Length: 322
Ligand code: SF4
Image (cartoon, rainbow, N blue to C red; front, top):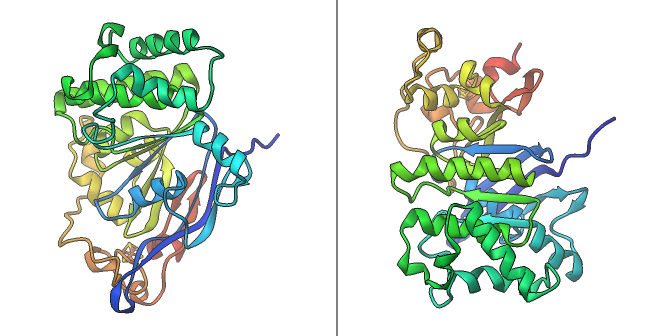
């Protein structure tokens, strides 16, 4: 029996039109699927389009082309009622826990507000019980519920942001760099919390990050993005043990691997230069200006994302020629 993916993204593009006829291609044809209950990590340097992708999926941006289907329905052609329902099912945890919480509301009201809008849990008494349950689930006491966001640390605010996202009993969460604004000492705590909640609540996660080590820890599969393109897509284990795309190899080169066997076998790539502007991306393969393995064909032809082995896709002429 074929299980329908929860999310199907087909050739999604988001171009921003700038002055003087210039176009910024933040997303330039991204395709992938997400299964129910899966955590999908999306990694890449800043400016690669990963946050834009999250925002298109959350319908904060309209796509320029392509489509994203959630349970088979296009996210960008919803009726008012469907849109209201999808707003409940799909939630976002933001990068900056400082600016994503309303400073004028207490923690309790921050969490009650969306529940009231969606008339969840039947009564105010039950909603308040849910606030208590969720605060405890994210490791905060209900005694804190009458306090305001500025009274909390960054890590605590991110926990509140996560509890608020869960208040609507969503199915799908886009976590956009949820740990990058936090101290290193609390990053692992928040990732562990997300992992625990993902299991307990059966959530599907799109986890956006530039920190590959954290992404490996939380993700079932990982997509690597570069300049608006998905360049490699596979399971978390395969990506770390046999990275195929030169960009992925370069990203992984920067992380020490504790297993000496894997460390000895892997190729070393040092990434030179900056990511080019998405306003004026290189022809052919967008990675070619920084790729140590670039060939003539790389300037002429854009490599398609293709399966090299089962469950392992890569966009690179080194493999597509075989
Ligand atoms: Fe490098 Fe060419 Fe592969 Fe692009 S297609 S990653 S330039 S070898």
